[in-house]
Length: 134
Image (cartoon, rainbow, N blue to C red; front, side, top):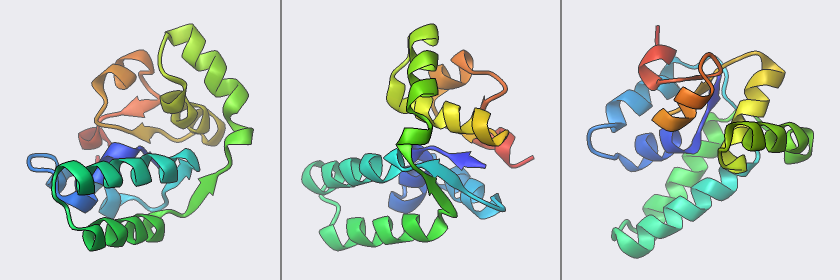
């Protein structure tokens, strides 16, 4: 399965109310594929948590290492960019999210996401975390 950044973030930094579900998604996955963009998204999110939510730097760095250990393959953006732009334009949605959708199309496996708007725009390709554990 493909897992978006928020699933990793919620699981690894313990976001109240979503952590348990996110952890279950990661534990249930036989394989986790992501666009290489995930690393930049997590680095950005974790740095914000350190600066604005008083998460210790050591916790953020450990979470980055944990995320890396969970990933089976990070797919290069150049294999996904063109399709991601087409999807972004056709659905009027940010291209960084459609990189995940382009990967889902390519691999024939869903993206697991907490993002309701993304799920609504790409039904069948993007599923809620609860739907990924069935």
